[in-house]
Image 1: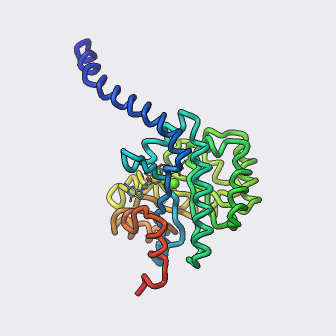
Image 2: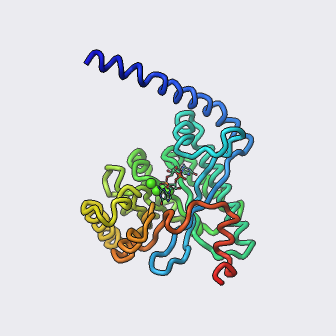
Image 3: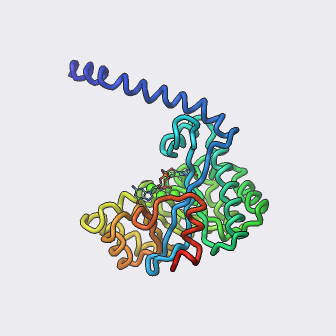
Length: 279
Ligand code: C2E
Ligand code: CA
Ligand code: CA
Ligand code: CA
């Protein structure tokens, strides 16, 4: 055990060090990135399973780093969270998404729903609902056009304020999706909260379809529960025809995944949505 421990240490220390220093670098650069507006949004379509029609897009943030190129959220969101910068990123995303909705509306694009991911910290903050409301008003975006995605684990962290926040969002006319559903190990009481209208089935369950009997059972149970609660279901991470077929037949309303489209720049979404592209 002793030698194993030594070997383990010797093996992991340089890697851990590399990760730590990269995180430290990212940390100092992240503050500048906010000031210099190095972020951009890409949009992944969500399709109606029955028709293949695009009914929504999900905004996903990217950091366009001057030397490193594109940095993915899985790398910088945790850093932003530990530095207390996540709320500023959320706020930037919210404003950028509302500006994009306004631009799309003015260009005459069909009015799709636009989903924005909200961090646990952002959602739990007392000023959250006001911030959303102001972002909508500034761009005169109808609240029904914006959907908020909140992870199941974020709901768990919130506690008592959850219901009040959901009620306020509902009053504003906003709908909420429970993101990464099935991964949060939490109670399901929040599925009854006002504003909660969608349930997004996590990719980890979709990836096993249709072969895994366990994933089939779990997804069928989620769809049944969702139906009886009057929620709409979106499956994420659909990569194969077989997954599409299964989910369509099982009655899942919407799907998202590389099978239909990767996340795209706003201009590419416009081309996809323009009537001319249906020739
Ligand atoms: P998420 O909300 O679950 O977003 C879905 C992720 O799955 C996206 O990764 C998307 O590009 C990826 N994806 C979509 N279809 C497929 C597929 O068919 N196969 C596979 N393998 N992956 C697929 P992305 O953009 O890297 O985002 C990762 C996570 O970062 C998101 O997970 C979300 O939790 C977080 N995130 C992204 N944008 C934002 C943001 O603006 N604000 C906040 N707070 N978090 C964000
Ligand atoms: Ca999401
Ligand atoms: Ca998700
Ligand atoms: Ca996910």
